[in-house]
Length: 119
Length: 107
Image 1 (cartoon, rainbow over the protein chains, first blue to last red):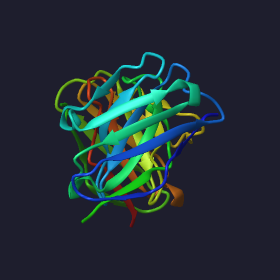
Image 2: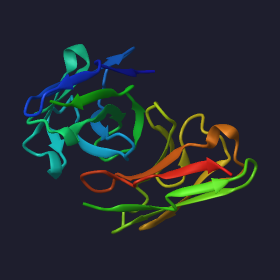
Image 3: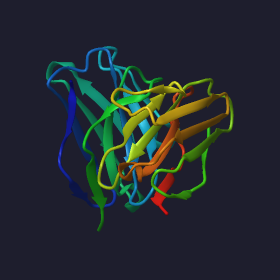
Image 4: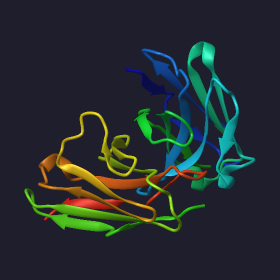
């Protein structure tokens, strides 16, 4: 079974950018979609966007449009989420998630990456 | 965006008892509704999808019901490992949206 392995924790300054990676271990993405969900400290889950690597076209939630870029490299079975113009409210755990499609439930999750935005 | 509202925010139940969690959508999502369980420091785990289908290895004490705008998750006899936060998620419309969660705590 494919496991999603994310990059490590990051500390960033306000106004900068962060890139979180998500690698499929033990397999490939296949025709599945990779989504990104974030969770602020003590808060709920928020869907940011997703991509089906085999098609390559990302989709973003309106709230993050213009600040987030989601890409995927099929050759290395790795997806990336870049968030720019960081502010303190972006401090959160960022999860990558595997689903059968962008309109499908999430079958498996990465371990999460804590991004802290602080001056 | 479709807003998902869960109730109650916190539910206190004794082990062995039944727990019923609710989730309502601001517009119909058909049966495109999932439930997740999240424990502290962990990623969520898929319990139920398509409103009523248990995911792989999910115990039979978990059941989901509903369609359209109203859904429930029932845990028939609570075990110690079931005390966690539960989220519903609609994946009928873009973007997918989650409820704010119900914390299930030991009474």
